[in-house]
Image (tube, rainbow, N blue to C red; front, side):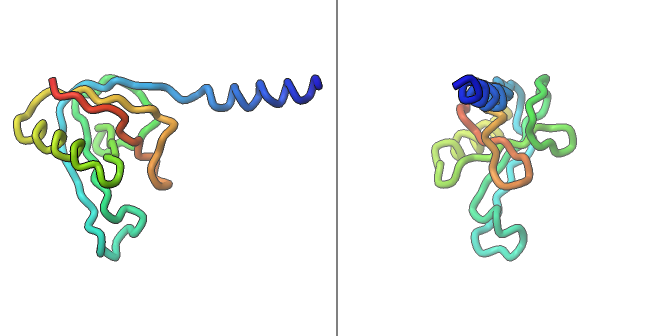
Length: 116
């Protein structure tokens, strides 16, 4: 019984490293990977964007020092909000959980998106 409880707490501690981050800034770039492209097949139909002026340190992929966030597949509402924020140069607030990643490249997945 002792070993069972110890195993449970070790597993629990291993999953406790994930954190929620609320990152505020502006969108720098937006990228779409075409569905029929032969380059990077694991990225087919995915969109990601980067946030400039971010002051946090999640365990997420960065491009030119900016956090890269993936929009989940078939989420047209989030994509529309990202494009509107980019075109209007609006401040945004993005919430991520750095334990949720897409593909093997360490890109974090969007949880919440707010235009300020």
